Image (cartoon, rainbow, N blue to C red; front, side):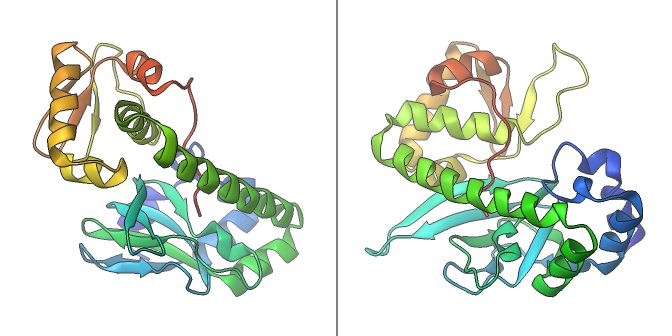
Length: 244
């Protein structure tokens, strides 16, 4: 593991984002980091596929990972764009589980991986971790069902606002309240996550820019009024989703 990657995985950075590593005692936490296997993916490379055996738990250290699901009709439904530092594949803590979504790097990406056997060893050394991971797996199932329902029932403006809110809660707050929160997301990615057309995304973002909610750039969105986006999404403040 490189020194750069180790620096990115310090406990003070992991705390707000990782769903399981901060649960470990200090000595076991260091053991878990030592057991991690670094992985690098090129843009477009698949991390795992929907329906494949869930063999590893991952932590995204740098880059982006796009989560999507294929319907029986072959339609691709975008579920999330995962930003650092977030867990992936938590379902692998459950014996004989399969990944419910596919994960693909949307840009050069670095992750750490813990095989299922390593997770079981950590659970044996710290039994509360096993219960914690089972609860996370249950949360995965609930959020997948809720996300599927949202895609089928919400108006497109609500879907767009919810995706922006979900991306925003993955990022640290700006260093000053007056500064915008900058999301590394393109119009095409938003169209895939909503799902809708790029033209609808451009039209909606243009209207929201006129209202002062955001400023749209080619590869980023600067959010100026997150509270207004919450209102348009029809939800209150929330934490990151746990889909896997």
